[in-house]
Image 1 (cartoon, one colour):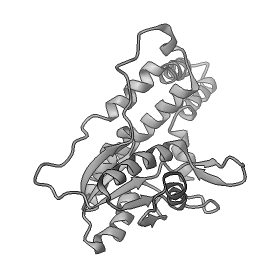
Image 2 (cartoon, rainbow, N blue to C red; image 1 turned 90 degrees about the horizontal axis):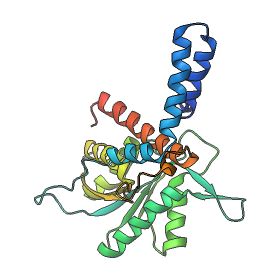
Image 3 (cartoon, helix red, strand yellow; image 1 turned 45 degrees about the vertical axis):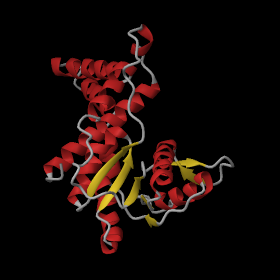
Image 4 (tube, helix red, strand yellow; image 1 turned 180 degrees about the horizontal axis):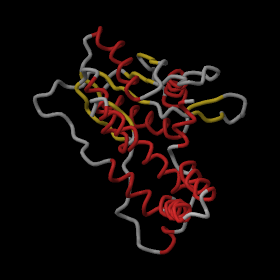
Length: 248
């Protein structure tokens, strides 16, 4: 039920709900407004100019701790929560977004020698393997390094932080690098700080809007742009939820 409600709140499902509601009320002025709103929102969210700037706006405010902060003692890599098929097609592995985070974490590990913790569970899908285990496999197979710890129960960013603290706090580790997408970092920082960590953010790439030229192509609707808008609105709703409960 949770997954159904979440997906209905995100594009394109929420836009489809608007259009259907508008069609049911088509004989009223409010119905025409709902249909028009859904159409306009779809056009806006599915062009690269809008979706890229939505993500870029979410990346504001990322900052490292002050000079008096404790230096990082470990590297924590957050999963994106998705899976992909192996080349043979008969098993699963991490998705491209999680793989990107692992790449930046592997680079930071080579630079610092700090141990790695990977975090990600199976969420509410009991029949699929925990993403944390797949992340550890990918680290070993693709980057030739071992994860020191695997957290495989979390389904949310807050659980990433809480369950990571359960592993690291008894070891005296309270200052960590946190690796995730730049647009996800502010919420991840808030979650890990709430769990008692000093957080050193590591962005797995920033959204590039500086090189966008104002040509008609960036305003043409595309599936890629709509996917980026999906991520942006998902993140925005997550921040609103966390702030409602005092986490950010």
